[in-house]
Amino acid sequence: MIMTVLIDYRLCNGCPGRLEARCEEICPGDLFKRENGQAFLREPAACWDCCACVKACPRAALSITLPFQISVAQHRLIARLKKSHIVWKLIDRSGNSVASYNIRNRSRPMPAKK
Image 1: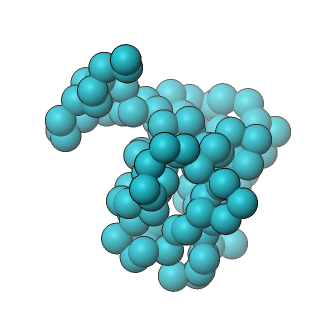
Image 2: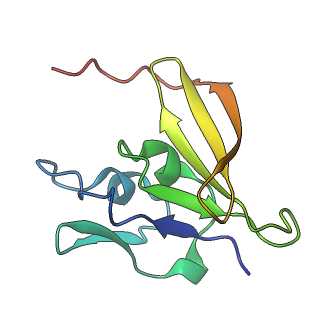
């Protein structure tokens, strides 16, 4: 199994009101596009596994699967961007949270919701 981005279509809303979805805008490989109002990863095998899209998704609809060499249990990582840090959650195959990690965010804080 290769590392790749997974999209939870129950959560993805395609970032309405924006010219591009956040994942489209930030992906260095230009691999995302919107299709039927949701994000779509055109070439999963071309993904660089940089996790920029996972961190940028405001709805935590994107996750990255960990390859067998890293996680025998095939866990996945999701991220939630907070004002001063990123919360990474390790999720097992059944969708249960295994661990959570807070990493200080070096980028500028997200603007407050209006």
